[in-house]
Amino acid sequence: MAEIVLAALNAKYIHTAFGLRCLMANLGPLRERAALLEFDIKQRPMDVAAAILDRKPRVVGMGVYIWNLLPATMTARLVKTLRPETILVLGGPEVSHPPAPEEIADLADYILQGEADLAFAELCRELLAGRRPPERLLQCAPPPLEQLALPYDLYAEEDLRSRVVYAELSRGCPYRCEFCLSSLDRTVRLFPQQKVFTALDRLFERGLRAVKFADRTLNWRTDFAVRALDRLLPWARRGARAHFELFPRRLPPPLRQALRQWPPDALELEVGVQTFNPETLRRIGRRQDPAIVEETLRFLREETGARLHADLIFGLPGEDLESFARSFDRLLACRPQEIQVGVLKRLRGAPIARHDAEWEMTYSPYPPYEILRNRLVDFELTRRLLAFARYWDLIYNSGNFRESGPMLWRGSRSAFAAFLEFSDWLGARFGRRHAISLHALMEAAFAYLVEIRRLPVEEAAAALARDYLRPGRRDPPPFLREHLAPSLAPSRRRRPRRRRKPPCEERD
Image (tube, rainbow, N blue to C red; front, top):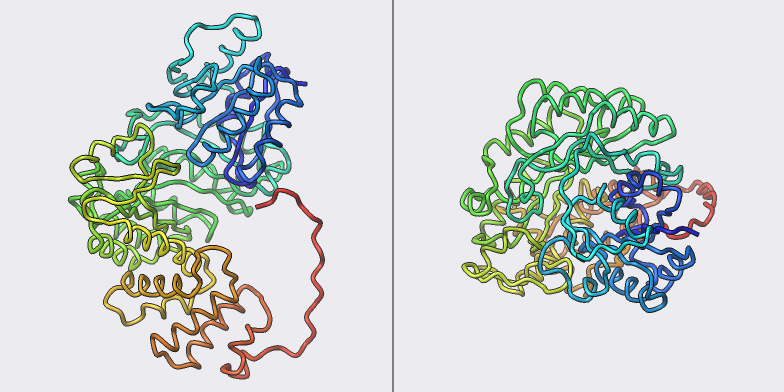
């Protein structure tokens, strides 16, 4: 039994609910009367609701995001249908900015808008004492971060071993990018850094090997970034990894030196490029110099061991396909390990909505609210770019086509145009973007390289075979074998028997 249940509907099993852990950590004496239950959106809402109600809670708290709005709505309705007296408290971006989704908002007894670390505990104290605040919508003032209890002791051994562990050193963002909700928070507030790292030390000592920081940017201030990197470095040298977001601005010498110290692949940097078009950057309030972005990316790629994940956004107001293609080719020339091709989303409350009329921005009414078309981009082109993004993940970002992938655009004036042709061809061949095996994808790539791009059969087969064998696989796929030199031919030795792993439910 638990009088308070914090129920998380995560996008995947591997994700952990950091926000609800923050609420749990700050319940004070009520923490002993509360339970944190985590689910993922693949689970049946009926099963989720049953698990919640099994605890016989008086108060249920849920976070509502673009990735869980539909299952969260279904779960909330089932909870209120089966036990109407249960007090449902909602928070999260989907209900914090008008207009809130009508169905789930109507189900809520209370909605906490903003950072509810302390406000949720205060509301629960009132509710469990039998006092019902008259206002349903409660605005939460940003809490002083130094007063908050940290949530890191709420990570279980299973979380440290096989799930994404989140942390934060700051809240807020100094930038004003209109597509992002962080642009609404015009200040950056710091947690007591030593307090956070002492808590993380305990997690590393318990076996944590990877941490993802939720801070909006690592390098908003050089001294802040250098202290964070230097403090984590000893753990990185012992095999731990860290993920930060990094704004692509000029990196001063102290920060460059700190980045150079990290072992290869121990640091993952998510760099939001979004576009190289200066006019589009100005239009969306993003202050970045395209030349400095290139120099920063090249430094990171050539002089550090960081793994780079760079983002581009398709569908920004005023940017057509040709402009996006130029940005893509320019970014690819900087050689990040991953390029995430995203389609613009209109998040609730984000200032990007001010361009709707001028640029005829039309978004899906359903999460994740992706752009459908605008004045320069029609729906058919958007569909092609969604397919492009998926196939790019499978070919380039996966790392499975390290040598053969670039052959798809080798010698072309535009890598983007060449891969778009390949993407269209794959779409026609498979008729789908998901559930494509590596063997099927490699066979398709081989056919395209030989039949469409007219590459020598032996060259294409050898590159694909080396890609296939690189992670330690044995024996190339059968469709390649007759075209391979003896050094890449199938091994005649018996394959070692694989040790069967115990089943693990709910793994993604």
